[in-house]
Image (tube, rainbow, N blue to C red; front, side, top):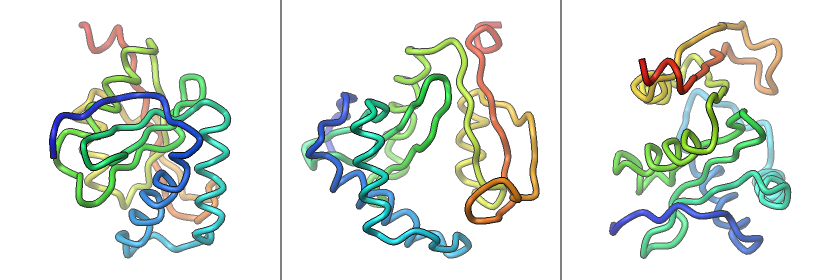
Length: 151
C-alpha cells in the first residue's frame, strides 16, 4: 500500500465506505449485527451527504474513513486489509488538526481500538452498561483536548 491521502468523501464513495463498515462488523465476533448491509450503506451515504466523512485513499482506493459531526467522531473504520498501517492514525490526526477537542464512544470489548485511542491522547471519561446504545453492549466515552496534548 502506498501513501495515504486524506480527503473529503464524495457521494460515489458511499458504497466503499459502507463496505468498510460492513467488513468490520463481519470481522468482529462479539458485535451483534443489528443493521442490515443495506442499512449500513444508507448510513454511509447519509453521513457523506451531511458532509461528515473524510476518507483515507491509497492507490487501492478508499481504505478507511472518519465521520466527524461537530466535535464528535461518529465513526472511524479502516478496511481489514489496511489495518495496522497508520491509516487510522492519519485520519485521527486530520480530525485533531480541525478541532481543539474531540469525543467518541467505543465499545468496552473493543480493546484494540481503546488502546489506539488512548495512545492517541484520548482519555476515558465515562463507562456505561450499554443501555444507551443500539446494541446494548458496555461502552466507554473518550475525550481528547488539544491543550492537554500540548502540556
